[in-house]
Length: 233
Image (tube, rainbow, N blue to C red; front, side, top):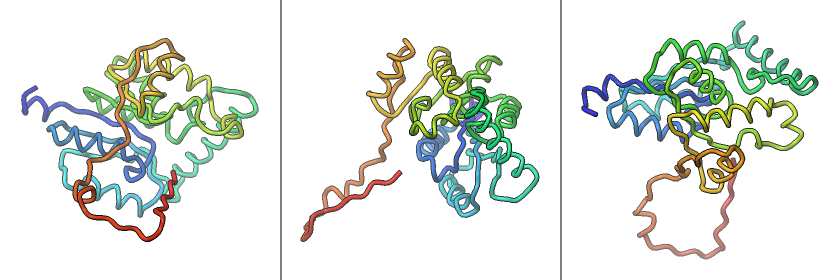
């Protein structure tokens, strides 16, 4: 693809988190932008301090644009309604087993409407709610890809799962794997498990890793105490 065509090729990345809390989206957006594509990120924000970090992460690339579909950082009628709709939807799923996308996040219909209006050449969907949005976009004739950051329908403890529309997630995962332009996930194990569950081709794998810091590897090291590592997520 020529540089001129790349510059006119629009890719929309749909996520439901701050960029500073979603490194896969940041890496993807920066890589695509470095190739010359126009990148638009639809996301949800809830913190002004995290928003500043988001801006810093992409400030050096002019062809990345962010649109905050949902803004919970401000007290407004819209943010109050967004919170109320999600809370009520979770209760309806928990007690009546309704399969509501609004139980998975905020602003489902706004995400879908704005995504359609952008009329991008390709959409890449991350996380639960955007997966549902992406399936609807496919049905409307758009080109959509998916990044299965987790196994959404199997995620969380049973006490939390009963507030999630698991059948909706199951159906969306299967539809996405069968109809996406491409799918990726985080490990070979998860790729095989998804393919086995849904009788689909395996998603490609992109690991959650970053470029090696060669200076750290080559520098001399000495430890007087046992090295302790603490992982949190």
